[in-house]
Image (cartoon, rainbow, N blue to C red; front, side, top):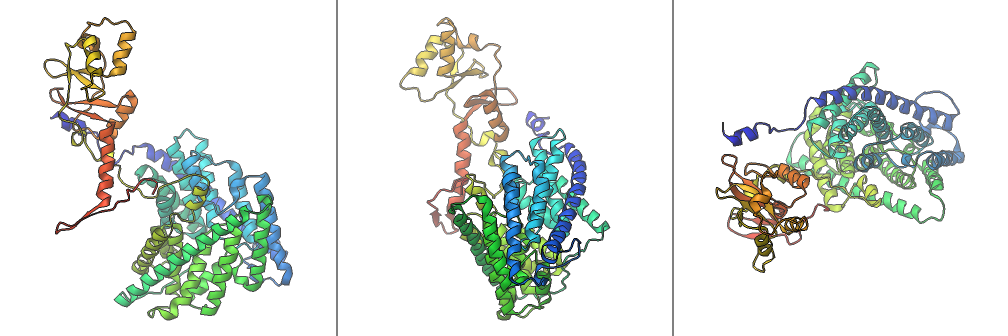
Length: 598
């Protein structure tokens, strides 16, 4: 067997080992605890709603809009916001906002560590916020709560940072599955937003958690699907045009909603009062909006059901969209606690109901459903999550093509219109940047032989220390380091000015040969069939900038490689993105180089 074949025997498509089974087993526990946390949150929301609007201590399914409190209803969101402000000020500031950016930040910057305060205060504050009329959903808070549960369980066990991240995301996926009964969408949300990698070591435990949560959810007889919908649509050119138009409209709405949220946040930042009081101002706006359109208050799942049934008139949809958008943006910008998924579905659905009369004929509610999915996918930059989310919410697999078409169009629109999404903008405002384009590492695909220098300048092992010093400092010497070879072409080591200086300082005689100085010294070598991924690790571990490349068969020098050669791979990749060529020989170059920051 050839040496190169022996070298490649350990290489595989993935680096995952049996440890993934241990993490998957822990994910089962995380899913169960996150499911219980999600159920508690849903019950708390209903309890808070009944106490705030009806003065009843029970869990009956009632809506804020059904209460007959008149102008006194304005004060309920204000009081709820005051409680949340106090909880954030004296409990944990991490409960502010809709939860997903905080989970992303913990993963990227906090070694996936969330504390017990978040696991307790986030669902409690969200229940108060939504129960007192806040126009939010429960999914963001339970994603944060489920993530905190996964992180806490992981912190009690001997796991790595990557494994802790996986368990955090597993808890988040289980939490989302609990609220909506959408395990596939929860897994896709993890892949598109939270994991920042696509590997079996993370995917398998997250999938296990979402599936376990869904199974346990069904054993508890929780509704599946949440919003049954059997509408279909014939595939045609006219239908395709309608899908694209809805996708573009959803992208414009997503852009507007994102700008509204952060414009409100900027406005609150300018207020001369402590941020603890900001939610009360947001609560006042929510209360006033509830007087105008009571259906805009609370989670509003009944609005989604009515839109899918086609029972919402265009005028009512317009009123709901405008009021919901304003109170949601102001309340979220004020720093209160609540989720974004359900509001995005409602606002997108309202827009779809308004546009339905101008689009090709379809089953009632279909255009609203497509706009819901596209608005959610465009705002969060998660088109696959939004597509599967709509399918699982409705139990309708026959609308996959229209859904992916509208979500792809919305995704294209928001990517071109906005540098960052509603989720990553908050992280950027805290001074951090993340890239959501995941590609195969070119170092994992490129061999040393493809980038090494083959015409290598060497020095003989017979050269003395004095001769080497004179050679390296000569004006005509063009390189900072050189491999030292014997008469047979075998590499003994590498010399450079710092190495020569160290020998001189140690008092080595000037006529000592390099061969004698390098005899029996351990040397780090590279091989032509080696991948740059492992080579970069060698350079870092040895704290050197260049390595001699030797043949695996006879160990003779065949090349030389340094960090500049590695950087050339990246430059080549950038050139491949900038240069455009056609069959007839026309070539165009995008003069603006693309960096990782973009």
